Length: 551
Image (cartoon, rainbow, N blue to C red; front, side):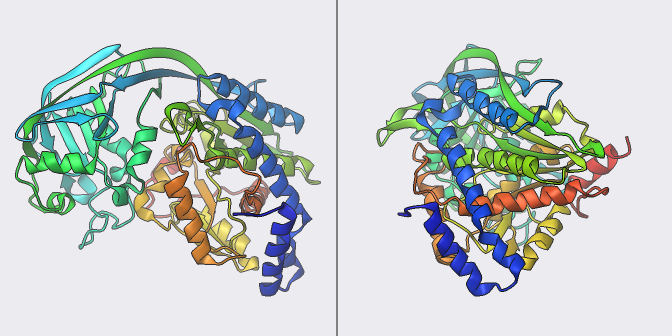
């Protein structure tokens, strides 16, 4: 996109809205206030996605610079330190890596030497300097799911002790000809985190997930970039010895070769969906060695509070993760710094912009507003998980979590997307706020990607707090929906979790400002109420919230 200035974007967007809207209130959508908000966001992204922050990886000098910048901005706005006099919440973690040997040997029917990052990736959570899988029998365990409520058990009658299970990504409902699970909408059973957890519960020595681009919702390059090198985990008393020795992924091509060794040559997803499916020994065994450096250190969530005027003991929480992947070799197209401009300098910029609007407002909120920039989202939602299990403010007094993660940079849209739409009452607030402008509110465009389980709001949902993850949609006001869809695809294919997610002067941040202002208006609405939003009937988080509210 070649766009010379925010002013030009504003004129284009303003003309488009004027053409479709007539009331004074509607005209306010694209005013100087919005361009100022867009400029604030752009300025923050320029700082947070600068090479000098080294890709904002926890445990690095990049973390020190990042959290210093965020806390200084909170202080500059006059926000109080949010954690007992400190702007920081310590998050103890362990770094494990770099892990896998260059090859993984398979002997037996499907004998081959697999190449690291080409055919497989493998790592461990076990806090050991070295370990190995040696001749571990391979078993195809379908989707690797035990879900009594769906009458599904891929591990039925299977003893996996000492064995390595090969399992499929996503769940049986995805693109199934019949209705299974929630159809194309991924359940938590489809997430890779669940597959690892269940394999460990079953006592497997190793677990390898078969990557397929459509059901995973991302290409193999994301596996190469996100699941290799050293990884961070929250520290555990048992040093993660309750987990499988090896957790990893297989390319679809290598998985097909393994399954062919057991006579499975048909579509593997259809095969595993059969009602009479039983886990299949693959007549092969696997060996791989992992060597790790262990580093124990403390990362930090950054937290600030605007005290409520009359109900300071009730809290509206804004969250965004500040981290990205740091510096990784080899360089891609000459770039080795993963700056994460969209993911998620944009979200941090947005909550800083929201904080500014709250501090500049004439009327102070009656409830307290908390701004929380969390660490290690890219390492498995760790900072938000830590806050959810070590809350600074009581969870049953936390009204809602409003999460901002990766706002699109192609301008204003006439629609907004709620991740996991239908989960809680916050959806209805968004619909009410957008209705006067004629904007649409949609659910996940790709419900099979399991987005509700892929950002920090999930860790608040897990502990019962109604959580919203809002994005600008795809229907570009200036250029139409096809353009917006094309831009979203370009980002997902060319920039997501790649060094090319960089800041550019030509970024169109007006859509980011539009979404940010909507989140601000939502916070204002919630902060002025005395009621608490709840979970909708059928949500798996409803019972957790209702139990916590009794205490």
